[in-house]
Length: 502
Ligand SMILES: Cc1cc2nc3c(=O)[nH]c(=O)nc-3n(C[C@H](O)[C@H](O)[C@H](O)COP(=O)(O)OP(=O)(O)OC[C@H]3O[C@@H](n4cnc5c(N)ncnc54)[C@H](O)[C@@H]3O)c2cc1C
Image (cartoon, rainbow, N blue to C red; front, top):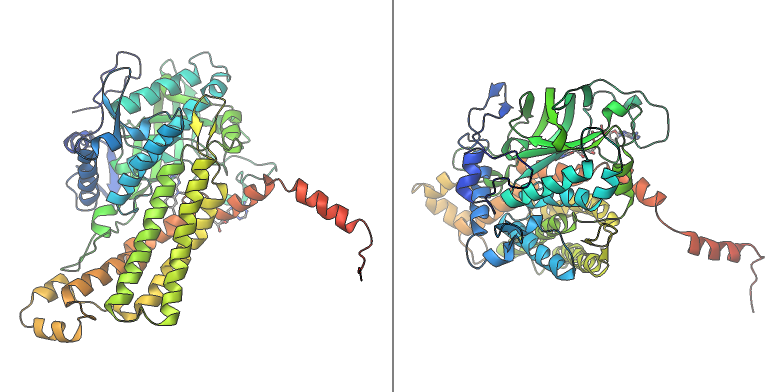
């Protein structure tokens, strides 16, 4: 089965994705490279199939009770059942339904998918919301705002899985635009327009990087807050194209999904979403797939607007990850009889503190929802939260390591557990407090996948960087942070001699 690329009214639509349809749709001739080899079929290759089949399982939940009504809604236009990830939120009730949908996605994948299908839909909803600003940029070939509205409808009615690519290749950062107001020159390695044709623009260059690119349907390409101020308009573009577009090469990193022998990696086997470089070798972007061209004002405005549709997918993911780390740490402290120690309990309490603060903040983001000029209901700001978790995630992993001790690395494998010869030794020396060796070793292996394994380390790196450079984000937060009131009160205080009354 191939997915239609038509975005016009009257398009073919299929509604909420099923597992079988998703797997079939990935066999579309996409050019995926791994370790010097072209991958013929990502759905069967060991580096990808765990993730692909796990997503297929979750897609099927959309059609199964009790999840169906919590994950989908009926499209007023077509009557299709569509994923709530694509619902345009019009009121607070819609936001609640979207929160529940994001909670389910993240409960199902233990908060391990940074770029699951629920995460990218809101990026297109954001563009939809600013469609009149996009339309205001003139083009003799298309209306960018109309393109976005059609594209949103196309994605929603077919439940497409998008990834995104926002950054330039990491070749030479010394003269690239880094969100500082200074003269820059553009390197030809960054993605840019090389030609305009009747059908669209031809783009050439690369993007670093796009998580989940090899297993997604489409890539949304734009400019991050770091790269949005360009010196040369040819480098200003936002669009979305199918993953199998001619000339698009996807280079994957070393997989973290591959286990060894009988060692089970409960998270790594199922949730290696992959990260990839994208090489665009004279790729055609049709006019109806362009959302911005030569003028970055609307994208810049969107970064500064405080509009937040991305919230739930990310916030629920992080909350689930925090709950998982806290619960695993608590269960391990019980399993090795250290939970009553004051120092251990205090560390667990610190983990609960972060997790609870996150939940309170999520409620705050919901309470601060507001209607946008585009007519949708946006969540309140969460600008400080992303930065907070970029720094807190590492602290939680550290606490988990401190609570586990050496058991984090010293556990028998599944093949060890199955060995009759080893079994008596394992049962005697590797059991826990009131728990058998099977339970204890699998529990520790889960902790290992959070805090030690290649998968766990990749997740850690992801948490730090995925929202953009935390230092840049801190600086942007500072620049937009209104301190005028308190500063003026401080000025009043220090503008007169300080007196010791009495
Ligand atoms: C696991 C993972 C998944 C990701 N997934 C995606 C994705 O799906 N889509 C996507 O678009 N992006 C993704 N990213 C990219 C992410 O957004 C970037 O990593 C992040 O924006 C930082 O950019 P960079 O990696 O190019 O680092 P660089 O910008 O090259 O930074 C390298 C170092 O130089 C410093 N530095 C750079 N420029 C300056 C400057 N002007 N002033 C001072 N210091 C500077 C940085 O602070 C840092 O210490 C992902 C990243 C990771 C690690």
